[in-house]
Figure 1: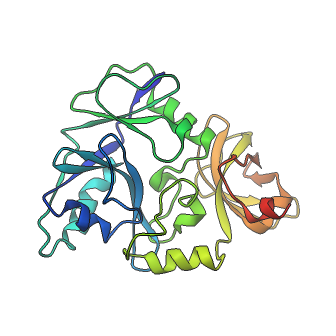
Figure 2: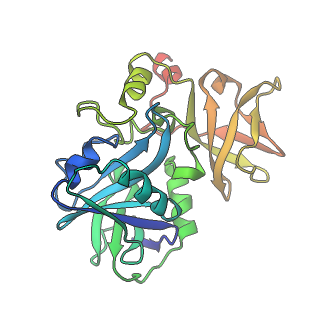
Figure 3: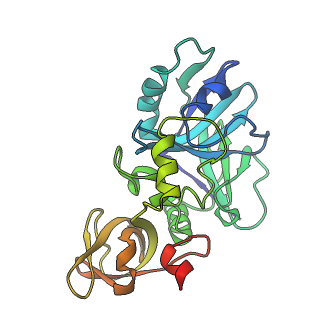
Length: 274
């Protein structure tokens, strides 16, 4: 088992008797029935259904803890506070109270608040503890692990007020509930799914050559634009690729060649038709 402390993750605490009902009307997943020891992955969207932030919602006693990008937590507190109205709920940045870790491979850790990653069994566990736990891996090691699985990492792979959840695998990775009531951005998210409006997908790529910087344009053999690079490390990456460009792979991105590596969990229309 590998355990890594993730210093770029923070925690937003949502407390009060209305905490679940409050989040339920705002985020993409169903938070009303989370059992102790479990979590859901969810996103906060604009009214137009575009990504703003994503996080793990973890029950902890009389509170729900949102394991989120540390840099986004203060803004999330401010944004969510606007919707509080008469809800009996409190919101605060609890990043100094909790240290976020990831664990993968082998048995789950024996210390901390240990939660299975709800996206994929292979992803491992989220581990929260008031103190940093003894680690035998680095945040960079975990980054390689999630890249190999094709898991997006917030603002590294998505664009605020531009990205659509289904482009980033939120459907297959259990980040959206299709049975819950209304939430902010639900109409566009549902329309995107039921009308088949997704035209691009965030997919893992093998990188042969210097790692392209985020935003580098991908081009096929004919020079036509095929997508753009997102996050990457040590020969692995994620790229946002146009669905009609997959038959032109591999793609050139700067001085590197990128070859898509479609994981088993991902459903692509082209593969289903093959």
